[in-house]
Length: 396
Image: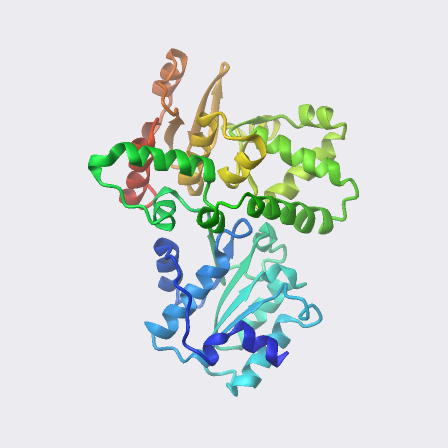
């Protein structure tokens, strides 16, 4: 194991670092939590950059905070050759290699932690018995399902989303002057087609997206849940991408695919747990929310477009608006057949209307709702205004 751990931690022997393209908001958030005892759980879709953010944080600890490299440990827990070792055994091997006492403060970066059985218990044991600051990641929502509440009061969850438009511009090394507004619109259309998977933005290689989808379907769903009918899973995924930005009725999708409603519901939960889709409930009382169809959004618009082609710009734009307000736990409003896209938990009413205006019926519903604020987001400028509004109000 010693050779493998040294490979995972090249900073123990060298000061050579790759040139990271910074995701400043996330990195600032990670570093702001250094002095807390909380276990920081990074979640999100595969390849949104969780590992890279960990490496950025490690670089910052060494260069900006003066932490000795030997006191920082990174490990990818899904790596072949580590399957027979527990998290505790791996950490103890690190301490032994570096001759570090359990009382000395160390920084642990544990990637894909959900691959280890009883990871919640092991993280709790690390928290309770070692002097450690733990950052852990997972591409599975299983990290959020701590059934025994072992990490309650000990964890802080940060979800890493695909690149937003500002980050996309940085990754593409684009800086556009106000006088060249038309170029900004062109860049935004490219973003609406490409999406925000960092590596795909840099390479533009369609095989990358195809491989990512295959990994999620086969590794995270078919293999993990021991599903025999691979075709049904892939067909279900394609229908989810087709319905992105629209209501999804399990009865209809089960009839189309020739499966039971229970199977369709189970498949929906599987895909949700990988972050490749998100669902939004209808606003209303509990029984209304449970009975009504959910709306579906793609975990990345580039993945959606790889399946469906770049069509229905309105649905793509609505998906981007959803990303901007996702943390506000929105529901969708439906009354007498008239729909408003989002009503947040803090009572902001938001309609995504790319290049269009509200219909008369939507306008009447829009004005009739008892809301804290109302916003029609109809353009790139409107989306940027939404980002600014959220930043100014710090979640208001």
